[in-house]
Length: 161
Image 1 (tube, one colour):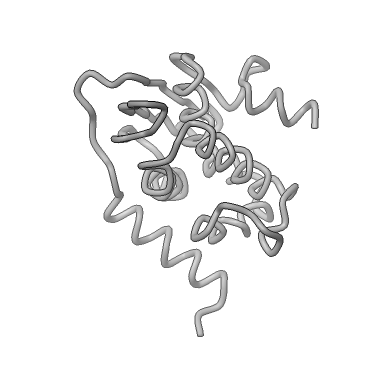
Image 2 (cartoon, helix red, strand yellow):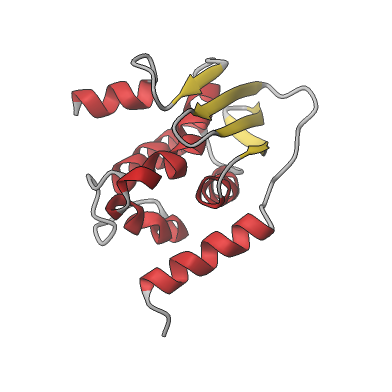
């Protein structure tokens, strides 16, 4: 049986080498660019929504392995989901990554709980949640978001929690 740390490392390596949904979409209905100035990660998230459901989603950019793996798993997890279900995943992932959600308690994260240990690596938390910040921005018609600005809706939620 693989322990959680080695499973985490295996997932990061797999999704970094072979990211799912990596690329661009023609004429997306929603798009945002996310930037983490502390480590240099920069991602573009594009999606096609129809009838309040994410039909297609893609990401591309330059990022560390943790950010790329998080984006890869995120896109796989939200494809086919409604906006409301996606917003629940965004909130739960952010809460898990920051230690506010115990992954052993009921949640909607499924395989995404492999990232639960990131809460113990404070310098890497923003790498893991950048794709989620960016997806949240895209869903809310924001063209760009940064992990270091006061107007980042995810950061503002953290301050107010």
